[in-house]
Length: 385
Ligand SMILES: *[C@@H]1O[C@H](CO)[C@@H](O)[C@H](O)[C@H]1NC(C)=O
Ligand SMILES: *[C@@H]1O[C@H](CO)[C@@H](O)[C@H](O)[C@H]1NC(C)=O
Ligand SMILES: *[C@@H]1O[C@H](CO)[C@@H](O)[C@H](O)[C@H]1NC(C)=O
Ligand SMILES: *[C@@H]1O[C@H](CO)[C@@H](O)[C@H](O)[C@H]1NC(C)=O
Ligand SMILES: *[C@@H]1O[C@H](CO)[C@@H](O)[C@H](O)[C@H]1NC(C)=O
Ligand SMILES: *[C@@H]1O[C@H](CO)[C@@H](O)[C@H](O)[C@H]1NC(C)=O
Ligand SMILES: *[C@@H]1O[C@H](CO)[C@@H](O)[C@H](O)[C@H]1NC(C)=O
Ligand SMILES: *[C@@H]1O[C@H](CO)[C@@H](O)[C@H](O)[C@H]1NC(C)=O
Ligand SMILES: *[C@@H]1O[C@H](CO)[C@@H](O)[C@H](O)[C@H]1NC(C)=O
Image 1 (cartoon, rainbow, N blue to C red):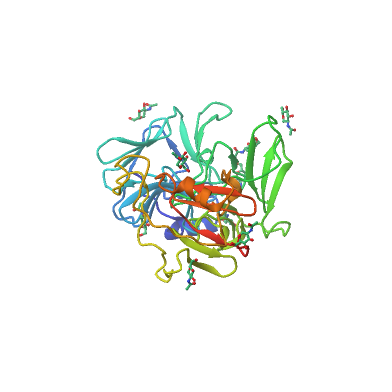
Image 2: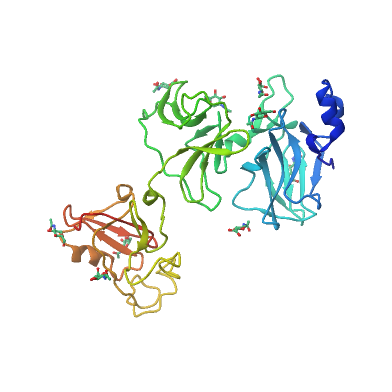
């Protein structure tokens, strides 16, 4: 296995760089610039955070083993100056950190876990692996057009980098599992595939056919001739944020949701969010000071029921009722509703039905929303109806 050494930590190489034309000497000390069939790597036990296996031509990006919580490892593409991972091979499932974990390139990039089982694979029959100067990791063929068989840009994790296409078949998932809301845009049915891309000029463009975006979300740096590298990330709180690298820091350049109350469940289960003033609890006998409104709540009311409902049936009788006026479901326009003539009638559709966690009724419109998931944060509205 090659032991990667950064240029900066290797004075002779730095010296040579100052006097130019040194590639031979440097290639032998830096991580490889391509991986060929037969490549194998195991973990270096002395590496505490990131073990580089492949660099891009600028040295800004590196592909290798990333240690997560000292117990697990991820195969990652890192932005080297900030140590920020831009892509992970298998974000929802990490391999345990073990001396026996092995990365192989046999046409596919394959991770074998300590028992020799295939943990992750690109499933390709390529000739080499390269890391482009865009941070895109590719498995290529040696044919004339260097056919790309697989690329990390097609499997984004929680981050898009500039010029990376994002299509409707992809998803961004934050490191704790939030999924992005669908964007609204004027799209022509059958008018060709739709994708978004972070444009280096400082905006997120949505495209359908060709180079003119059909929708644009401008970053703060839009039209300010800012040359920092841009990324766009789905954060753990569910917000989408854009950043540029100013040479030493990631500077916030865009956020999709500026009002905290519009984030997914900003106040947690049974929380109540008041725009402009923050979180409290739906049940005014509880305090959010501990950070939570309820210590625990059932994930599934239909299982393990108890109560007098006849065990395993559709009904439950072991409940208490909490009513609160002047509240609204977030993103209720994305939920289905029925129309009932009164609040008790709406409540009746939910009561004793173990698939229903709550009901929200608007006595102006008569709309009755049945909540079929564990209650998350609701919004305070001025209107008591
Ligand atoms: C790593 O640690 C964080 C915080 O301690 C925890 O939330 C996360 O689940 C851990 N990840 C893994 C893969 O164990
Ligand atoms: C590479 O190794 C994996 C795991 O052993 C195997 O399934 C796959 O067929 C191999 N690919 C090639 C091109 O040999
Ligand atoms: C990145 O690679 C492309 C294509 O190989 C090249 O045209 C461009 O100049 C490179 N950019 C940098 C910053 O090295
Ligand atoms: C992004 O999509 C455009 C238009 O389809 C294409 O020309 C370009 O090569 C794609 N970029 C990447 C990095 O795949
Ligand atoms: C996109 O291209 C397809 C075929 O090239 C065409 O049928 C369609 O009308 C185009 N859509 C738009 C919005 O221009
Ligand atoms: C890449 O490195 C060069 C210096 O080598 C620097 O000017 C540039 O800003 C870096 N790009 C990124 C994306 O960090
Ligand atoms: C708590 O809510 C109940 C029902 O909405 C209301 O009757 C009561 O006055 C409230 N108590 C406080 C302290 O706000
Ligand atoms: C129970 O509530 C669920 C979710 O609202 C609904 O889909 C289902 O039809 C209800 N069942 C009955 C028997 O009303
Ligand atoms: C809805 O309920 C509120 C509060 O109970 C009441 O003040 C209002 O008149 C009601 N509106 C309608 C249309 O019934």
